[in-house]
Image (cartoon, rainbow, N blue to C red):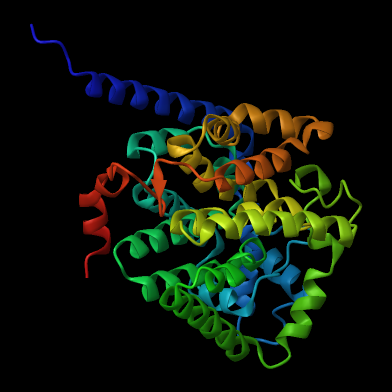
Amino acid sequence: MRPRPQKNVDLFALIALACGGLVLLGIISHPYWGDIEAGHTDFLAFYAGGRLAFTPGLYDPQQAMAEQLRAARVTGEGTYFIRLPWFAAAMWPLARLPYIPSQFVWQFLLLGGLIVFVVLWPRPSLAVRATILCYSLPALVNLRMGQDVPLMLACMAASLALLNRKKPVLAGLVLSLTLAKFHLFLPLFPAVLFVRRWRFAAGFFSGAAILLAASFVVSGPDWPQRFLTAIRDPATTPRVIVTPSFYYLMHGSPLAVGAIGIVLMVLYLRRARNDSEFLIAAAPVVILPLLPHAGAYDCLLLAPLAMTALDSGSREAKVAGALLLIPVTYFVAWSVSSCLILIPILDVALLALCAMPSPNRIDGVTADGRVLRENRKLLNLALDD
């Protein structure tokens, strides 16, 4: 009898492992299912923003609370809308639905974002990427809270896939949608100019300009002032216990935070010029450990660079990437307040290790061309003109 090929054995093992991860996440999330069914998630703020889009009350806490009470009979301190006005306009169609059906559609979109990321991100293998996300606590937190980080992952993966297919302008336009959480992608703005990929930069900045112009249409000429007032409200910032940042360790010192930021930007730009995958994957990794406004769910944005490191990084980079992908790290960091600093430390270590040149990578592609060949049919189906 012919022995079963090793590849099939490995695939079955990964499927079994992925199922185990889903069971684990299901058990962890079980106590919160009632809250999700009742609509007690951060989507409530997005829904209120959609209801208030095209009105002067977009950033008015009292009007936001009134909309939340009407929608779900509950409000939360600091949960009113603090995104750019164009995002409220994007939420407007969902806000025409009753709240619970609207949240169901939103959760479906978030799951879709995770699937798009798994399919389009180039490395490691498709089966391994899917298995990793089946154990991802940050992914679970996003689904529990109704946060839109999975959609940011989808934009990153789609943009990289379009770049690999020599469609830089469209890639830049897609990546500009990360303006929904612009504070987590600030390093991209100087980086796309530094790498001198002018068509990609043109698409990125054109998309950002269109979204900003749309914001003035949605909320009037004075929206920047009202927006800044809203985000300065301390109630809108996640608690320190779930914020993976050096900011609080350094007591908000601008000099200390700025010095670390400069070092991280130098590391980032050093590698980004010759590696489009690193350019996109590392942008949130640069800024996440420095921000006062970042939550546990934002740690999902570490996954692209961690997966890249796991596939083609040095031994040390593989270790850092693996630690940022497994649930044990987040259990420890989020359960013991003194260990919360573990996440930004691993974040910085991952960036530094990935920024070092590797002999088997040229312009974000392994020398044997394996990454470009992997999932070619899937990319063609998703991205053909």
